Image 1 (cartoon, rainbow, N blue to C red):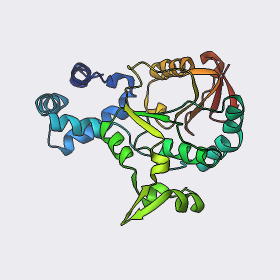
Image 2: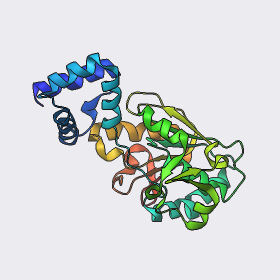
Image 3: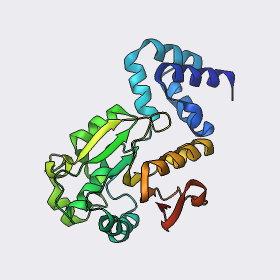
Length: 257
């Protein structure tokens, strides 16, 4: 790790509490180099000097650093497994599910869960917790307004039932949005709440180092009740789930033993 980059990530950690060393170095360094070059800086040192004295620049940096790529029902076949196999078992064991969407980005994932649950029960009073490190993404999630491309995999009947078109955007109906509570959270450093039946954390673990992933799997396991499930992304298969106290319930679904 070059001194320039090392000093940069140490400075960011002191300033924001975010530890960039826990992300894969090559990917993060490439991403940040492209960002500072685009802004006309010649080094990480120059870039940090600007971030250190300009709050707006720092806010934009944090927004760009986080990975906000999401859509409703992303990888549709996996959501079918959740709806037809995982949720029925969890509901049999506990009629009032405690659900957390971790690294929820702009909200498509927790809202997908809420829509899915609403097909099986009355949602009133059932709050899904959704967290992300990026407060701008959280604000967009709370607004519940999405471009059509985010709805590509939403079944047409669900799209008609739960969305209203407003110009070029689609507004999620309040009967769904009111059941999701958004909070800012750093997965790697903040404490987790507990006793969840289902934790969904998809398409973010691939950006972390093996050490960071090991830490997160253990924290997620500790936050689930026995029999609770961790649902990960389609490039994030856990090859040794028993090491973390899980067993495979289906591909990309891990049940706490």
